[in-house]
Length: 146
Image (tube, rainbow, N blue to C red):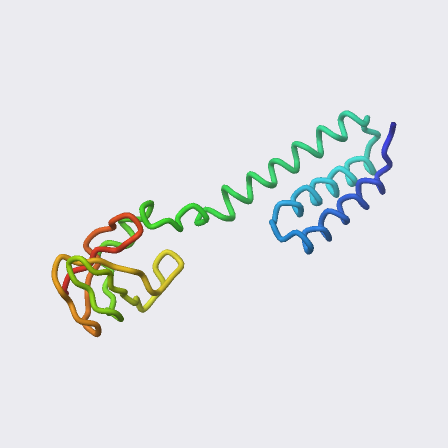
């Protein structure tokens, strides 16, 4: 079974269009891989096995490149993984916090994708006061007075 260059081109376009229906941002790379194979087959006679191998390699390189080079911040959205980026930030309490009660703190710029975080503290602090992040406790920020 031999596939012509236009088979790969049509398949690639179908995969790229399918990305509009399934917004995972993965199908587009396989579609682009198919377009690369279409170009390679149009320029030289390549066997079916080599076509499949080229498509697989190009597609996987594009996917890996997307996750490694273009989306490095994807893995930095968890609080526990970015302690150093958060500690020392100053925000304003929007809900009172006490030693055994959770409060909420708002930051001027979003931290880790959100501008309001639940917080805990060792002392009672009223809303409206400025606080500094002193630690990260699980999914909560531990704050203290500035």
